[in-house]
Length: 152
Image (cartoon, rainbow, N blue to C red; front, side):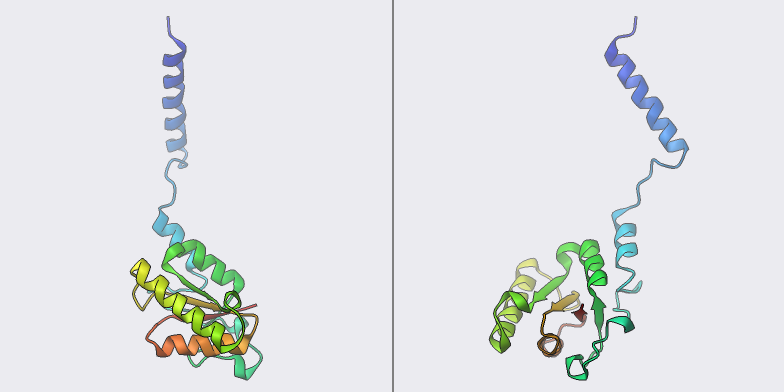
């Protein structure tokens, strides 16, 4: 006579076999999911793709590098790369240049603590687009290679 434990194990084996047979047994790898999610902002080599729809209308709110992302693209990148993205939120630290200075120092600290290199994507956000652009330029001048201004 079969015990309930034997029946449970048998049923689990049958279900596992059926799932594999229909192709549902293999989940996408984390790397595949990561590259698919970040595809809207980064190319296969990790370079930032131009986001023409995210370019600010105000000429003085544009960065020298011309790298922009929509909020949706930025969210995809953060979901895909997690802690391997530096986020600089200028609205967190007060207004004006003093807030930007603090936000930049926080980014440097987070980079050092997480042992991230200068090719780490940096997302710069602010309600003040001109301040965000100036801060993005400052981070680029400091050696960061992939600084992206997030526009609403």
